[in-house]
Length: 31
View 1 (tube, rainbow, N blue to C red):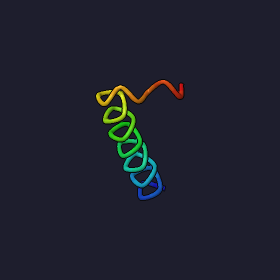
View 2: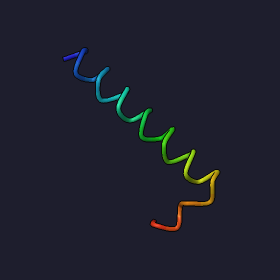
View 3: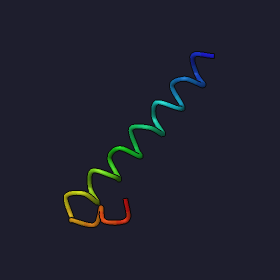
View 4: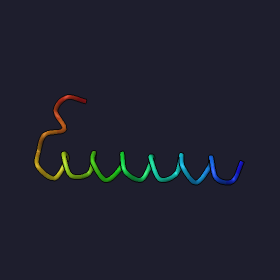
């Protein structure tokens, strides 16, 4: 269970990083 949670957290962090990068580039208008 702990490994699965870690995996989800890694994916979540990756998504946050990607969204933040898009926001910094001003490409967040899709939301």
